[in-house]
Image (cartoon, rainbow, N blue to C red; front, side, top):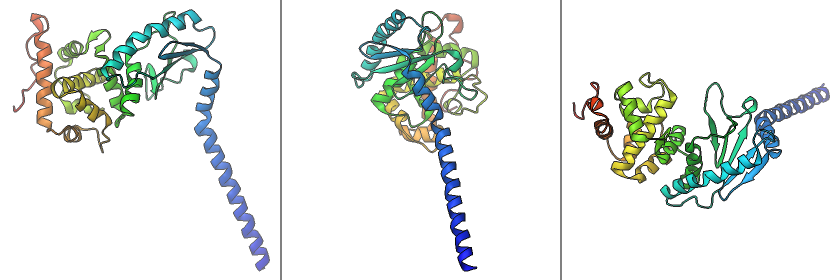
Length: 283
């Protein structure tokens, strides 16, 4: 009886070990299946390079001449962004991978983004005969090199848009002021709260978040933006942001309101009045 029980116990342990091994293998396959498929697809893509760019695209989706021209034209943007970062990323190569819409690893139901940035690799979709890509994608890649990964994910896109300094080819401050006219003034706490109904569009939140960083850079220096970008906070909220920047919530709101009002005051005469819901600091 003892020998039989021992044998059964050994068999049970071996069976459990096999089951655990199979489960672990299945987990590894699930975890690495997408990156592996992505690696295989990109290995067979056509390539074009310039001084700071490598462009990848499936054969037939973009001509080699178009790829080379896109890479070459992107160099001026690289130089402008790198100078703003004190040439911290001068030796960087940005890889931009164009995918057909049907297989692009970019947009999902939870993250409807036009591109993704992983380190210095940007993935986006082939979007017409002349490829288009938001310059904030390049900025996000260069910030990764110069400043590392953002402590809060949202700061990656906000800081990249701030670094570019434009929103759809319009100066960031003016674009934010136009939005302020439509939506009314949004306090910093509203900007930081993704669940707030005061800003319903993710793009609107990126624009206002980037404009807010622009205000911080102009009034307190780019080093404060760097500090905020790198900080790992328990929660990305008004209290933690104020603590990180060495100030208080009231002062954060006061500076943001006054900076925004300065842009509103510079708009056409019919638009110069302060929004009715803009409360001045201390009120």
